[in-house]
View 1: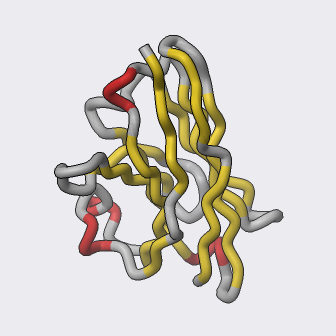
View 2: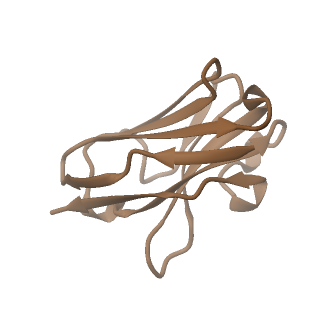
Length: 125
């Protein structure tokens, strides 16, 4: 699966952004999808994940209540809507794909087989 993330940019604290990740190359609907982020000097952090069907989602603590993950299997796309952004949300955001069947491990980077190139989100105070 090839993944292309987009939608990052500069936003003021309290604002919103919508990240998109376009998939190609394999059957998108066979994969659970996740979003991670990484700030300089920090480990890659789990943000959100969604099952292959879109029926179940899970969020990291930093994302709960503010971010929403969704997917469109007809168009091979997964999105992350981020509201009430904070300066500490500043990071490079990555989308990733994992084969079905490992939902309990979706917060771990090693679960994912494919990664996009990342899109930078900068939140100013």
